[in-house]
Image (cartoon, rainbow, N blue to C red; front, side):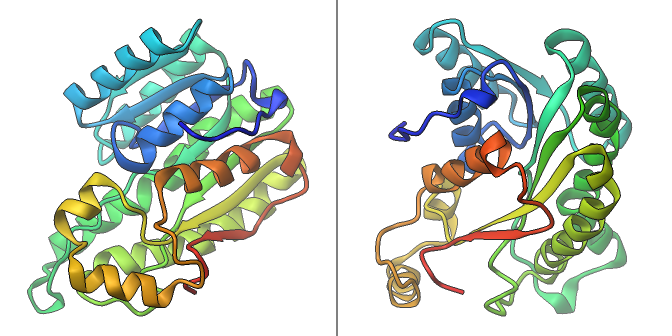
Length: 256
């Protein structure tokens, strides 16, 4: 973890992260633990998540981090976990709606059931997580919600319409909820990553051809890493961004 900035306002706050077991989510979990926050995260990857929890507890003195197994398609389970986190770690003041699945699919073969599944993975949990944390944040007198978008639909990437459609809808969710929750001092923003070099991306999608395209498209030619996304998430979660809401913060090296 090469991040150096510290946000005192995050120390002791309860942070809830979806999809925290790997990729960007794993980096988010680690970054917030290093800020002294109490971090709860959910994922379906049990082994990887348990290893992450154990590693951070061994590496970071007094780390408060806990993994909860949860399939986000199961909304009652998600609601139950969020209630459990309040009982075990305290009311949630930061929500990071990070979880998503960008599996490629041919539009000609998409069934109504598959379409609904894409929405149920990539969009529906974001709303219901917001709904579930709202009473906790209101009780605290405010909070910060970060919904994760995607640059894919901006640059008209094909081959996964269920994903790009759901991710474009995240901006609408953010804008509307920011208006609804603003009177309770709850901020809602979108964080849109570019092409981040996670293990999944490197294994499945990044080859010599796409690597050249990425370098050509970005203004800054450095590879975009999970830590670059975590750096923005820390800022948006902290009190330093107390008047930032209803916005879309793009971290993509200047691609879009």
